[in-house]
Image (cartoon, rainbow, N blue to C red; front, side, top):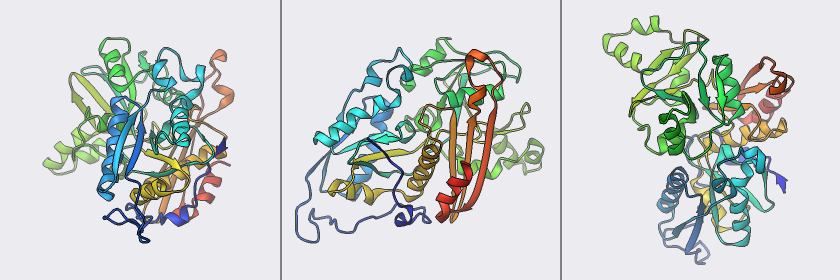
Length: 389
């Protein structure tokens, strides 16, 4: 096993936010420039959950559009993590249990591609494999979900379902008296547990909710890029807008008076409220919202994936994973990492809990540390170093 440290981003033309065409040697007639036939069937491995299938369909659609002559076949596989939903992941191997079977299948030749949620990938990738590409990043924010009509004040005591330490510590920073309980299962199962009263609220990733159509991806749903432009807007400023703008903004922007942060968008659907949490108050996990496409490190399939790769998302993935690598952190530590790209400019943010105060047995106060650095995207490695000092 080797720790993947990312490829040379300079070769990926990161200053452009369009999908990279990494190779021009493939032609629509199914032949390369030397007249050799391309592989006719490519097997794409995925887990069987609705979210995994939806994400894999997005990958296959992108590949089919670029390579219509290839037969891309979906192969569903069950992992240890899918079969054992009663225990916390840390008790039987961590999130690697969702990945290892697919990596073995690629190396054996049973599948050619594996599709993953990038935030769930461990830092260690089997030798001979790589994250060959990504699709455009979806909304990276987290969403607090609760029954409509319920409100939460800063000092309220209520139960939140989440197994993520990163989410637990940040939600406790927002609501000091909250009680966090583990939550496992697919998206539908988790929402049903909320509806059944097992929790007062749960926290899920916006990207999964949107890809499943639970929250419709409309113009009214603010992406995090749009959110950053209004993070500092207060209600008083909104009320100074025109009557039309005011009514629209009041539906989209919620000011949390308890901690001063601005929350983007609150949607009510099926008797539930979906409240998008700002990245300022709930920094996402590294690579949250990114679909990672894993292949062998070279070959025809690798080149096909490179051809549909989105350079902006791939740059974010590489930088955010590099931060985790520098901190010797995996995907379970209470760490949030998020990179924002504005042309040639990058803003890189980190949230982590002080390990000396995160021991639950000592019941000490949780200390949340946040840091942000900015600079040229081409200098991403220096930004990572500055952020992790």
